[in-house]
Image 1 (cartoon, rainbow, N blue to C red):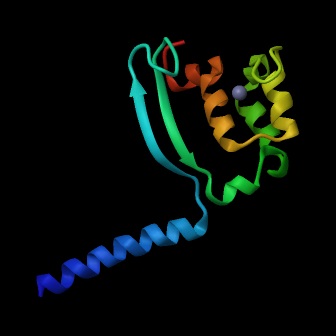
Image 2 (tube, rainbow, N blue to C red):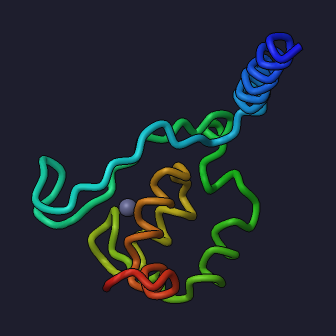
Length: 121
Ligand SMILES: [Zn+2]
């Protein structure tokens, strides 16, 4: 009886993974924390590999009012200089359209987001 239950449970987990892949959800494929200097930076960093799935076809410019809502949530996001090297650069990039992996990276690195999360500034 239990021999029949275990394969059924495995099939169920495999079905859930396949279902998630079909749904095209963003998935973290790998995440590694570097506590000191690394090939990526001299400071501590977290390196994450994402599969954007279906979201690959939806840069921020195609996500309706996503950018406005993000700025509303993190008002000082316009201080971030990413992409253009000037304050507001990241917001400009959001309006032009960038990938959600970029939003995750630069949104997280903004002072406001780090403050909200309790991470060191
Ligand atoms: Zn950026």
